[in-house]
Image 1 (cartoon, helix red, strand yellow):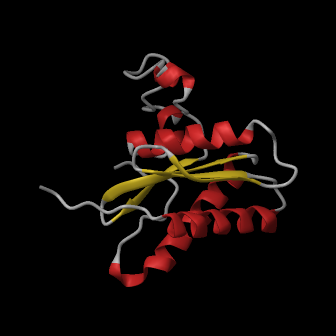
Image 2 (cartoon, one colour; image 1 turned 180 degrees about the vertical axis):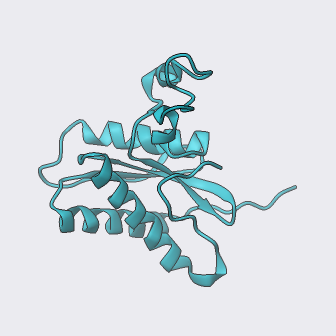
Length: 158
């Protein structure tokens, strides 16, 4: 039997606050979703002025990142992105009733080598969504301190 780590609500809230603070700093209205390891939302927040489509898109990105254990943009990054035409997972974005996101803005939350959740952003361009996602991961790293190893990078594949 394996003991596993679980992302707690307070940790998810702090991650969301960090992502939204970064969004405010760079001047982009974002929606952030932090999910558990199964891709179910713990926190979902939309900034004032953010698009009404943002919550579903952010959730889809977090769901995909958590469930498939990789940053969502890696699915369509040339030349070996598995969701690109001609590659092995082409069409995967139609899985889970269209909930599978294969574009930038979703990152798995990896603690001590284990995926414990996902973070998804919607509202900015790819670079802006990435900055906000990294801010969320950095917040968790700082919160947990030296007792846990948190991956803080854009290209995560577990």
